[in-house]
Length: 384
Image (cartoon, rainbow, N blue to C red; front, top):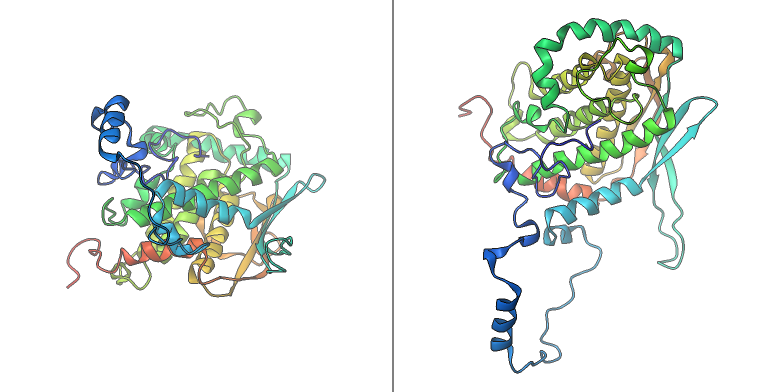
């Protein structure tokens, strides 16, 4: 899980400060706090202000700026990146609900539809639709998965640098596939950071309900090469976050200059990046393959939900179910295609309609990010 990592700026979305190193992205947080402007002290400000404002006169009635139109998505452009991100994230999280079942060892996640009723003095009357259901594997399944963890450990020397670089949000690994620049793609970077944060919140709440132990609890011989995170193992946070990003970022590039035919496609490469990130956590010794399977299912579904919101139109998405006791094999990103057999670990849970309001807050950021790719250079060379 990467929410408390040290990658600079993951607190992120604070002006894209996250992705440090991507074309100087770490600077975009800009003027955060205007700390120490030119070293001018408070006394100098006071004396200067007193000198130029005397006498004090209030503006004449009717000449002051008019009120900003209230409760409009377009107002997001007025706020700083940090405030904008917090506002959108709060809005998205407020739409989700979690139901845990201790006896079943399972959790279901639902998203909310608001139905206006009677104005501000009346409580909203929401209804909920299915998003995802996850049940944890038995102890027997987890024990059998230890063999995969042990076998993956043979790749630690080869992948150690990647594993350490991916302890935080591994945004740079996605930006190796698609050219991003902090100046021209600031909203795209904000979108990626926001998606990662949302997935982090969702997966932490899901982990709490499932309460699954890490591999090194089952065997002291696992000896992870990075500190074991202080929360449950399933679903994998890195897998959830990475597959949410790959799903949303890949769709963002549809119908832009980046969508020209390539083999493999940009979408396939982004999903391969997500898969590599997920598998690296098993190589490191902190996750079972089953954790990555659950994370890929949850992340992809969360991504599809966000894409429907981004469309501004109502439409259906597939809700998914992760069946822990069927997650006996190794992880493969093909699970996101959803199975239909009795032994498949990820299956369709139902169909849910998303009410995509045209002026929802997430759509505002999506459209800003989308516009940054209208004239973006093609990856790999000349497009003309």
